[in-house]
Length: 145
Image 1 (spheres, one colour):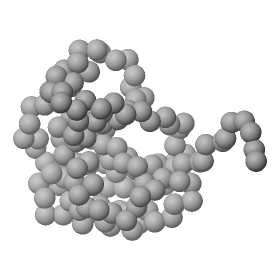
Image 2 (tube, rainbow, N blue to C red):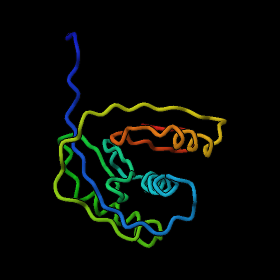
Image 3 (spheres, rainbow, N blue to C red):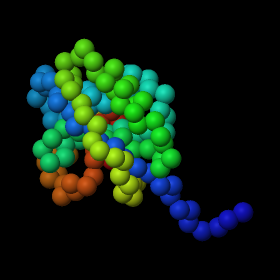
């Protein structure tokens, strides 16, 4: 039996640059949410991989975070291309270089069941959070950050 803090397992992340199709919604974050829904709907056999869709440097990217020993990046790239092939959601995606060590990550979820998703988004926008390093993802009535 061991006591004390456990060292978090090492994770790496890979980033895909996305050439997204036109957004059909005026709601900020709707395009990112639609892309994440498409990834979830693909039912990829990659439970150890966490996905986030966000803007970095003004560009839309898909970020995958996986355990340090994950070695199926080529397979995952092929599956993602198949997932978006023939859709207008993402016209093209390009996997960047090598996996890089992911920074420390803590995830929290807030359940807004029964709430208005647009009101939640407006509240976030109006808060003018100074937290560029935080990625907030809305999925249904759950906000994860």
